[in-house]
Length: 212
Image: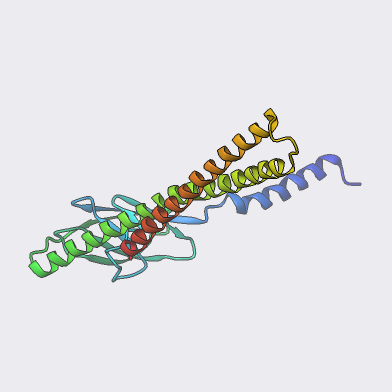
């Protein structure tokens, strides 16, 4: 007959095997630095679009799946030549790479770099405009809801006025006053809806244009 202690040991070993795989590292890392520092790093291609934001900024630690032993990186820094390296990772958890960048003196190449940076700046500004457009668009949506509410209340007051037999009482006067107030509020909210919608659409359109 199997003792309780033996059953406990078997159960402990089983649980240990189950969780051992979860605790095992699933990635190894590449630590990249440059001289001089401040370069942008792109992964996976030797000819990235430098007008787009980089994947990393130097110094950078790049996670790499365990089933890959190589990673292609490209370094970009104004006034220096672009550098692409297919890095072979060591079997250790972390590999280290220090790259000495080479100064560039070709005027055409340097101007292309500046053009990429200007394009990147426009794209970044465009993305910020797109995010900012959410504010007036949200205001427009809220104002549209307020408009519908005020119109509904104005219609209720209008029905009360139409159904009132005695037109000289305080209730009738209050209904007329409320109707005018709700109607005016609805007009203001409607105007806010269209103004905010137009502003949001313009900002969003400009943002989309600049983001390409």
